[in-house]
Amino acid sequence: MNIGSISRTYDGRVALRFERAFPHSPEQVWRVITDPEYLQVWFPATVDLELTPGTPLEFRTSDAQIRRLGLPEGHTTSGTILVVRPGHVLEYLWDSDVLHWELAPDGRGGCWLTLTHTTDDEDDALAHGAGWHAGFEVVEAQLEQRPVDWSPWDRAAELAEHYRSSSE
Image (tube, rainbow, N blue to C red; front, side):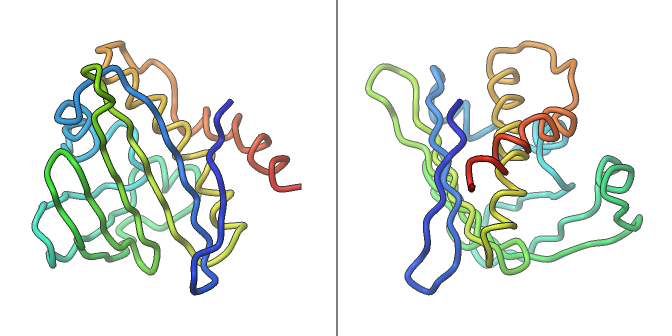
């Protein structure tokens, strides 16, 4: 199981990095990671990504976050779109975290998706790791047009033990 890697940045923050190969073009994967229709199934909050650098973002609690994490209804956090190169790079702030998505063609019609989630401490990175991992499983199903008949939240809970044990 590829659980990603954790490293330190130059300023002491923690970077969680995932690389995932998809047999789909960068444009197809781009749509799944930016289109609200797809995001609502796997992304951990509700957000409308207006893909213009400098645009403010508002991350709203999803029904699942309210039920599972006890977040209050109407709770929001903010961010900003930093970099947009359609089909290639998307980077934004989510509070103080930086999410950097990069797509690179693999030379065979598919692509590599790399997500680097930079946060303040290792416990945060590990907590996010299982969620992103489960999200990528949903992204894969969406790209293959398979029904998503499982909960990414339940899957993340299953994966959480692997992430905790990987840090020990």
